[in-house]
Image 1 (spheres, rainbow over the protein chains, first blue to last red):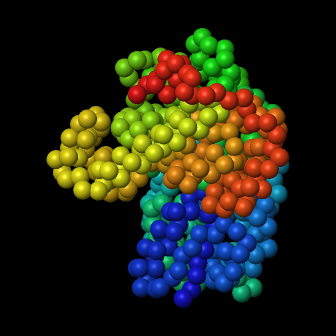
Image 2 (cartoon, rainbow over the protein chains, first blue to last red):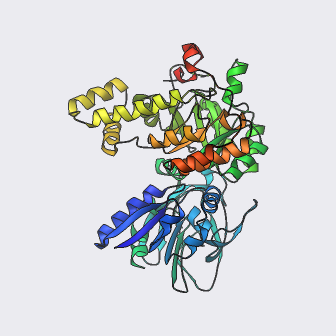
Length: 193
Length: 297
């Protein structure tokens, strides 16, 4: 049975565990979903989800636990919001930033719209693969630029909001919003990769 | 172009969901805010004085000077929360206009209204509120709070009250979930003065319907782990960090302990050689009138 991990150091991991379970049911797949907190938990994972949360806190906790190299080797990775920030090649913001995993060929800006009141909202999002979805953005990053090998699965206000990249034999999927709160479409897509 | 709906309940509760497994730290200036962010805090609470100092100084404690809130908003990229007095909707409006990410309608400040809490549905900014039991928690959710925390007893460095409040919420949910029939739930909802639908949803979930953090008296990594093991989604640390002898190390140790709350060997390592914790108070020797938790029930 395939094992999919959800990084559970900080953030909305329970929502992803639930969404993966629902997605597997819809696909009639048997998948073992487990929470990942230490290096040893990374063994034998077919894929890992990096949840939303605070990327500064998550990045630090990944480093403390010495997990970065182990995560980089996993066959498929799905990052939402903070998880996307961890995956990105380059981060631009007014604050000191270092890229953490540096796998996904995008550059992005964190917290573009500032505070919760101005930056967080619900909306309808048109996607290239799943039609129109109700989604929630929470203090999202903005993808400024994508590399040639990155395909854009959805745009919001002309900026990429969902992206996919095949990197060698590795699959990378990422969103600036939180699909785990409203839909299982992206989780189904991830499970099938 | 697709329209954007701001300030819906899902959006407010969603931010709290992303704070789970994290530590929110009280800070009084931008330097402390930076220390908190560097230690891995998921958010900071911008204050003029930490609860231990509010307790020592006495008098009326109010919303912080906007200058302090703005200074802290400019210093960090993580969410910034700030406290308003219970029922003081004008202070809440001021904080919302300053662009804070969350408002804590807090018993640590001197209540402005003995009868009413802020009607939190009126705001786009989300609110977190304190509770001592299930009724208080659900009354605050019914008023629009998108996140709940225990009251504990702030500024004491003593975890006993927070533990009591976590257990009270857990026990009441467990008791009503096992075998309470329709009429009993109706009566319980009436006694708690909460909508029956909200109580039913809570019993179905087997937990509070919003994110629930521990707060009030957390001073050590083990305190934080205790609250997490009792089922909390994260912790607030008020005076516990910047009133200790080595704030940087203690902050980092508490952050890591919340992530690895089930790993005693790791907690032992985190607890070692942290220096002096904050000066603490025995809650049993306190007069009921001195307790912040009795405010705004």
